[in-house]
Length: 340
Ligand SMILES: [Zn+2]
Picture 1 (spheres, rainbow, N blue to C red):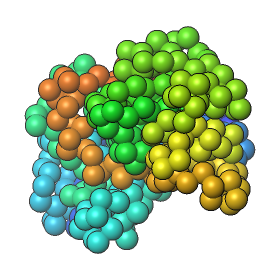
Picture 2 (spheres, rainbow, N blue to C red):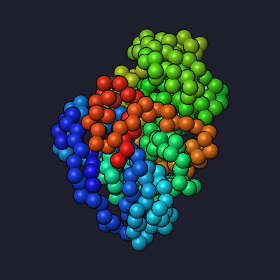
Picture 3 (tube, helix red, strand yellow):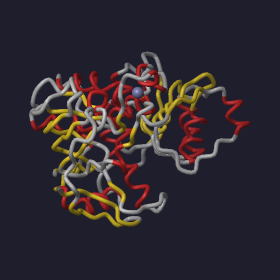
């Protein structure tokens, strides 16, 4: 089969990979219908991680081709959406709702790599969820977002305790931040402040439910949030970047007693203890337990109540993966869908 790897930092190649086969009785083999490039995929291309023929891609939807002897909830021919972290969905951590930290968790990025034609998914029952039937083609991009960016934005909003009567600020205008806005809107937030300086992303933020736009960043951004919230700061803040600047912007934009859902993959973040102590904010985040939310998100998409697939503003064949990475790195695209 064909699959995408990062040969060395920034060097994205489409190569021949071995076809996956069933290894464990809990495995499933899926034929990938659609996959995409994530903001987190760009970190290794910036030299932020060590790279040696890294298997790329962790977002995926597809059709089940084959199942192991112990798989019971899905069958060949089913259309499935899977989480970007595999999970058994039965251990104590999973049943508490933290499937991305399952005792059997495996990050699809680097170990499976779903920017490919096929994938072997371990713990298929605990990782994959079948849709009610074969989806109309226009639903596929939205279902694909449930695999990570929508599920992650949703978790961020839940972790930030978003709800009716709350003012929410969203740091980061990538796909996760934008879908955090959609989640905040669905969860009934009264006011949603998007922090963005890009016109196209501002427009999508408003379409997803943002009520205010703040273009300032850093201290000026914090000052604007305070100004818009009677000097107090937001009740709920979604952090969807993962840098020192964005984390401090999130903490300083939150009112005492408020909640931060942080889901940007942390790179070089070092929180100052004294400031954190006196901020009196709740911090809750990490790799999103997407599997917890998949049934609910698939249902909302299936009923066409949400249209998160709007974050894809470019579609390319899998063979053009290198161009997809360039387009996102240069911010020519918000998110690129790849068709194997
Ligand atoms: Zn588990």
